[in-house]
Length: 86
Image 1 (cartoon, rainbow, N blue to C red):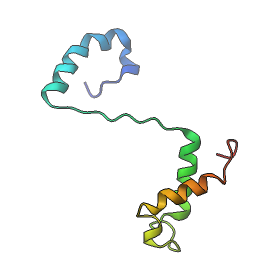
Image 2: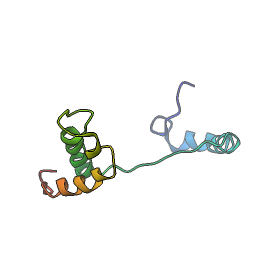
Image 3: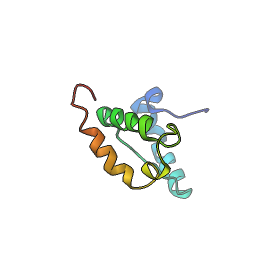
């Protein structure tokens, strides 16, 4: 099998292989990271990256993006957006 995707297998067929997958994951110490993307927040962060990322915008100094200072600036930038514009 090239890939295993619940959307293609459905609950019934996925249930058939669930125990085997569980044993495989435990034996090989498989780990998963799950993230939830909130679209308005993602839009604001993407805007911030395009404007303030020193790798994309040569006018921005390195320390204004690649340090914890960027978190304070992204919070300030977020205030420029309302729910509709985000």
